[in-house]
Length: 455
Image (cartoon, rainbow, N blue to C red; front, side, top):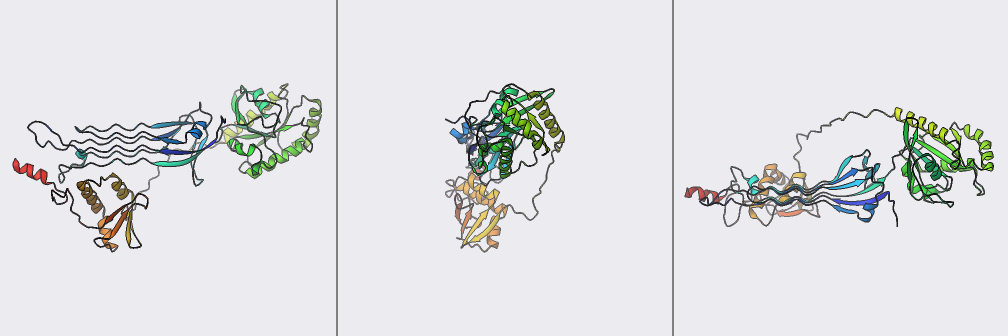
């Protein structure tokens, strides 16, 4: 069973907002105490939080569907519903959130960094909040809005300063174990390393992290072997270390050939050409390997890259290597630009923006816009008074006027929203609202008028 997962598809959904309450205050000797329905609570949010105690996305591989809590409905007596519980999803540092179209949404680094991946829906207003001088006793409340649904890909890119690259069994895991407290699996067969290993190295006053990935082989950039699958884990490294096996017994292999193959695979992967390189000739505790290392060192030095002959077994040369890597990491950190101050970008709404659009599609009129579509979701269409309130809001926004200007006539088919969850109306401008049995003009309520006459 896999214990390390660095790429998952996550289906997140915010909680639904609670419905508002339509209630009338009832008290002895007060036959009509006024509306007192509370508003519904907002839906919970799905939040990604960077947690350094988490090292894999395995939990989301097994349970990719995550949903926050729903808001509670409002109640009488001006009591609002409770907010839905937020769902906190801990993720490893270095997780990148990518949309299904491949576009990077956010790159999460730094312990405690938060990102709302799916917002909760707003709670519906109760009739107490909907009361106004014109509508003093609303007999309806607004429905809660559904939460946002988001399908995203989570990709883990290990945050390390030094990345070890090499063939299988070149000694990368042994090197990490020798210079840090990490204890990766080490064995005498290829592809022992199945997941990236991370270790913390101290060299004087400098502390840096070192990661090794599964070994690369020729054709890794085309999907062969395991290395290409994990190359994303060295994209953030300040320096790449080529670990070359000087004691290999495989034919047609030597440090120079191995180095060229590794460079070709990194070039095919792309995006790593600007990283400084350090060459490590490993396993010099073997006499034949030491001779080979001394033979190829001058030719490797001609490339302009530092060359270190080391042994992960006898620890020869490891101290010098660690201090050399620490110096490169310090130079990289010093060259990083200072973080820019947070800038607030203001994008005012254009003066001619009505907040909605009306288009004609094969004899029907389609209304699209944040406000109209949101108002439709909040409306209880089983309540005639609520439908009249929706008509009022659309008229104030200018939807009816625009429909008439587009050529809509009474009885024309009007769609608010898209084809999946849109609502279809028969266009009836200046539609009277209120319960049919009351026959009240829009914006009035005869229950209030009758009660005032009794007084």
